[in-house]
Image (cartoon, rainbow, N blue to C red; front, side):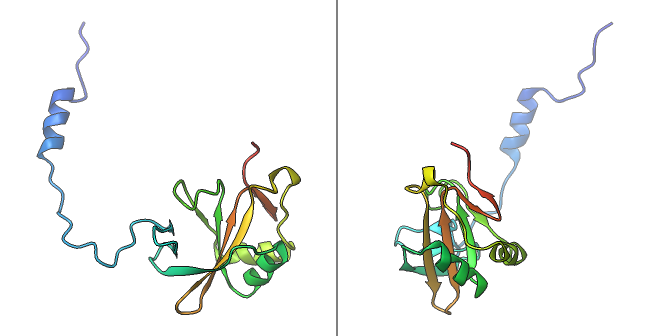
Length: 143
């Protein structure tokens, strides 16, 4: 008894893929390629809004203050500026974090963690939390 092939052979899949066409991109004007740190030293959010650095030496108390005033909180777990991945905290999560007090930097990570404030032209504020910190829940890894 021979088994009957239920899936197409690889050559047929290759032919199908080559036959597929995608719509060409006509313009990328105004589109943000990637959220995070940009080549011009600005920071872009997911919608493409650009933020300029205001203060790169925030304290934990400063972070809590900005968060309580409605700042967008973005966590960069490895400190690469968003090249790997950024975590964008939801407003409800930010409210919960503020209720737990100020973020804490574990002693062994004190040289890896930074807090910075960024501001958009419309006055909205973004706080970038870089590195493994403890704030209501653990933000970071156990290196």
